[in-house]
Amino acid sequence: MIIDGKKTAAELRQELKKRVAELKSTHNAVPGLTVILVGEDPASKIYVKNKEKFAKEVGMNSEVIRYPADVEEKVVLNKINELNEDKKISGILVQLPLPKHIDKRKVIETILPGKDVDGFHPMNVGNLSSGYDSSIPCTPLGCSLLLKKAEKNLSGKHAVVIGRSNLNGKPMTQLLLKENCTVTVTHSKTKDLKAECLRADIIIAAVGIPKLVKGDWVKKGAIVIDVGINKTDSGIVGDVDFDQVLKVAKAVTPVPGGVGPMTIACLLSNTVECFKKLN
Ligand code: GUN
Image (cartoon, rainbow, N blue to C red; front, side):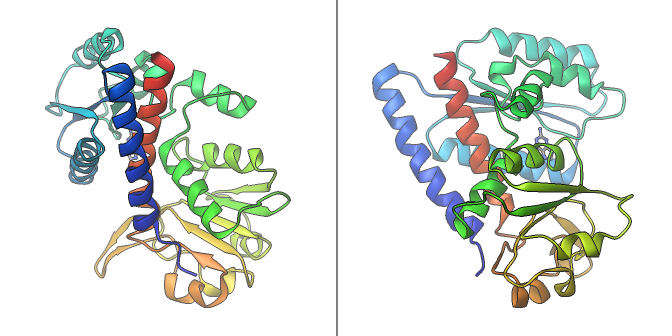
């Protein structure tokens, strides 16, 4: 089975469009998302353009604030403080990566936790790991929703997460624990990654190494979620060797058309959730 992220994301956006319309009629207001983009990173520019497009499609207010790569850190922090106070803004996202002279940690910690649609603020990170209500990072949230398409009950499954980043690996681990999975977190220093993967009922690949996960790394009937987006001479490929893995897995996500579209749909969903809590 190929898990269709494009279709699942379109369905989620359709549902969000209805919820936004309802909020408009009951609250006479719609959620507002502001994205801050610093510099000219080509991948970031594409992501941000798509975020703006889909936010408008579901009927939200959406604004992108662009700064040159050499903008002073305090200009960005002042803008975040202004957005924190602005009642029309429900969600704030600062696109990463940021230029080196800007302290990422300071930026993330300046965003009001209730408007942190990325779920990167330590308050949200802590709440998620404690099992309390929190914003959930969009990519792992998208992965969870796709996993559920292939298997409703994840309880007791052995999940192997490849990668331990704050963006994906760590929050993904928390979400899998919430579903009662047994979780192994692997990374660049893991001794025998293939052996770890072969034990998995679920593999989440989020390392940024093209086609790392081969067909003979996957147990028959496993579910494989590919978070990778790697530019190669033969185009964009994931962290999973899709053609090989499709032959052994129960289900696998393609790249493109898997996790990518879900990330943006989940960002919109988080913005609606923030709006509801703030109002
Ligand atoms: N850059 C790549 N992915 C992300 C994300 O999920 N959020 C933010 N803020 N920046 C990113």
